[in-house]
Image (cartoon, rainbow, N blue to C red):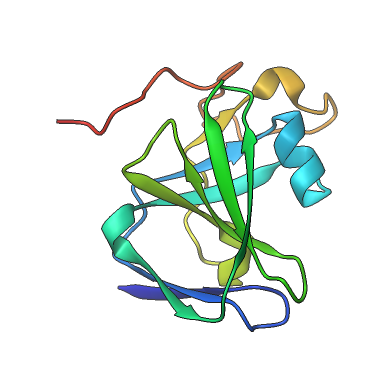
Length: 141
């Protein structure tokens, strides 16, 4: 399967092949500030499954709540963050699920940094919830 992700203005586009390794919802305050919303939803694809299809990105690198740096890639025209590279998981690339504009995209398999979750936001009962990030730094063998 091939999916296309794009920024708001459509100038920056990614090609993602195959299924994501995981889809995760993050409540950390950094994601809240980056998205302007209560959380971020990311589809994590193996690094080799993601390629630039159009445009050129600007990059912003910062430390994350987990203690590892993250490089965010965004459109210089409209400012949409399209993908990020977490140092904590160098084998994966996170892609903003909203950038696929696909209401049938798979639901997140987990919620992380729930200690920063807005208390009135209810999550599906079947979704595993972690107060912070589950400890995982290397690719599974």
